[in-house]
Length: 213
Image (cartoon, one colour):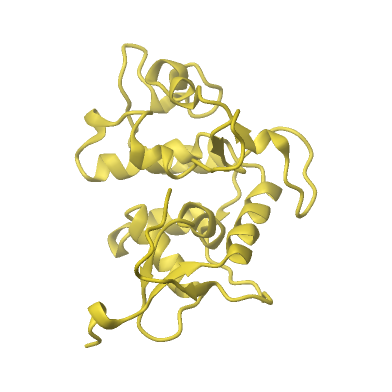
């Protein structure tokens, strides 16, 4: 087996991250799908009762430098017209994200309200996969590759051999807890098409550097 301690660390390339953002931006997606992924992972770990909209595990997914007035950036929108490759100013979100995703706020949402309890706390009903597909993805599975390219942009990867798109999909599944026993869930919500792109998905990283979320 390869010695992981002596294997190079890779990071996603800027072009890969940009590709992910552009592809997510072109699809109609409910913004709280981010919260759904987080809550589902918490539930599988038996920690749904500890879930918080202020959790660093959640907010690092969408925290982005570059806009002093709006700290969060995520290209999931369910309103407005989109054009391929168009990045909208509405992708930047202000500091009230934790408040918008609190149990009470989630409960009042049209679409995704089933993730919050009126008395406080989060919940995921038994049919949450079907609800997520219907109300958060609008019946169209989303690219696991695009989600991985954006949400894993700050992660480091130790990969044997030449890394590629399949490694990114595998990393996304690991990040959000979609192992083999969750294959049916994964296949319902995500597509794994691999496009023909003119860039590399990964580049070697200086192991002495620390990536910042």
